[in-house]
Image 1 (spheres, rainbow, N blue to C red):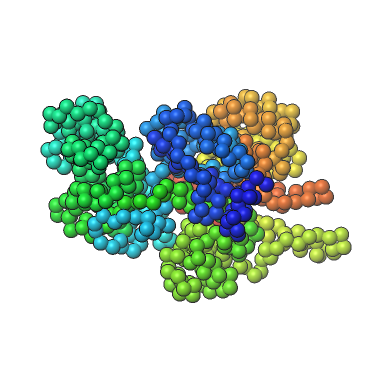
Image 2: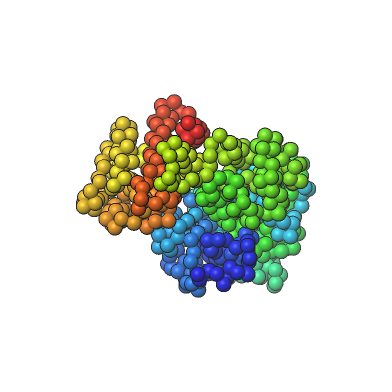
Length: 619
């Protein structure tokens, strides 16, 4: 109820599940916002990271101003590589567990991504008003885009075109070796070598790097200059015409131009090079007159190659918010609970851009045309561009048009009912049989359309690396656990099953790192099960929950494989839920089999795994 007054002003475009928490956490500053509706960011705040001793106090400080809001979903961009649950920041002594933060904040969803992955995801939604072009021509259509930006570090990323749109690069390109372009830069490199054996671009092309360049040039020029932080160097150069600070900025921009050129030729970035970060946007028009573009094109035989590539400065405030918002939205759309894909499109239509809404209208009014025609005809029918058709598909959580059509075809199959029919006391055996089968098929189709493959990948990975797997389940769920025990044991994984609530805690207390608990429960609220899960996590074991995604069990687990089918368990056994739980067991078993197979012949595991999972569900 606390969300209602804040959301009313945004009308139908407001998120039904409340505001979404967004953050861009760097080494120096952390920026926060609440996304109230698509493209609407409110309560933007900038906090200094040095004022906090970890990410949890930082988050609590911002959220203390919004205690009345019921936040369910969040996404953070962090200036750091993100690989798995544990995040350890490079330029600040902070480390945290994504899952632990999610549980502490009471969130249903928390995504953590690299800050320049988020910045790259923002580029497709930026307009000319958000950019300042510095040299070059027009960007090529459907071409690679490069992204970099100096701040406390040097972030690097890119957008790579595919047949279905763009994918982002998770890059740490700021740590490539620095290459001097002249004698002055070589002297700066020699100065840096006194402190570090390896000098990367980030050591010099960053805020701390600017301070090092100031120190090196003062020594080289024989100038008795006081040590200055980067903000003081900028102020002295731009406002006071300090000769040394102006030289520092000129060298800094030249080195950035060389780094941008290297990124452009490495990626073939004819879609342009986009510069963000906390330093360059503050330079304004001075940057356009700086040595940046001259140095960018100074590539010998490849100068003509680079002359055609446009370079842009991202001038809009907080561009990473757009990126993390897009990533979070795509994730949540992929988990939509609509009964069919048509229902999902109707449900999410108001969140789409006007152009994407025209594609949605065509899909809803002429579904067979969309299913059977190529992208050019779909774009013509909706009166949009072909990239808009691809963006529509990606906005719904699909990889592209081919992935969308695969799911859409199953949703339109006329021979398979996709509705739920209530069984009544007056039904004949024939009618109740048909309804039970139809309801089961409908639930499986809904299950397939809402399948979160990334969560499944993580669950399969945990089981494949497990020293030991233990199933905790009671009642109807015990049948599912028994099936899993038999299947996983065949992969020579030590496997046990506990169906007695009194033994859950005793068994969990014997676990340790590398062990995995698979807890199966329709309600996810059994106190003895929740106690055992907490004990297992405390001992270092991972927990995979199979059950309701909004339950306490789901929030306590490392991974939740969601079964959100509603059944009246007071009158009937949870039949369909049990079948969906068994499907998760089957899918994990197939995934383990694929992992074992690929360990022998080197086949691409992701491609082969997804092919087998899809074929398994289709069958």
